Image (cartoon, rainbow, N blue to C red; front, side, top):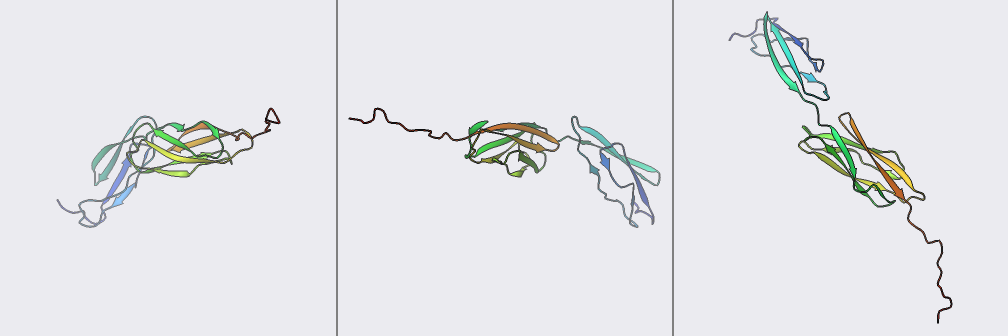
Length: 178
C-alpha cells in the first residue's frame, strides 16, 4: 500500500479502565505502520477483555486482548510454628498458579527476634518461593508474625519462640554416695 501522507495521525481510544495509551500517534511521512505502547494495570479476580481502537483518516481498526490477573498468594507455611529461639526455619509462600513473569515475594516480620529476607525473587513458572527465616535466643516466650506479600495479596503465619531451658538446681542424692 501507499505510505502515510504528511501529517497523518492515528487517534487511539480504549475500552477498558485497565488500559492506558497515547490518545494520538503521528505517522512519519510514507510510513505504513506506527508502533506505540499499551500499558495495562493489574486486574483481580477474573480476566478482563480490553479493546484498543485506532482511527486513521476515518478508517477504524481494533484489537481485543485479555488482561489476566496474577496468581493469588494462597498460603504461607512455616517448617515449624514453635521452636526454641536460635535455629533457622523455612517459610514457603504458595501461589494459586505459576508466576507468569519473574517477580518478587516480600517477606517481613514484626519481631526483633526474627529475621526475614525482605524481597525474594520468584521465577516465571514457579508456584512457590521458600526462604530462610532466622531467629535469636529469647529470654521469654516470644510470638512473631511472618508476612508474605505478592501482587497485592498477603498471607501471614505465626511463630512462637521459646527460651532454652536452664538448670535451676543440681542435686545428687543420696549424698554422700558409698
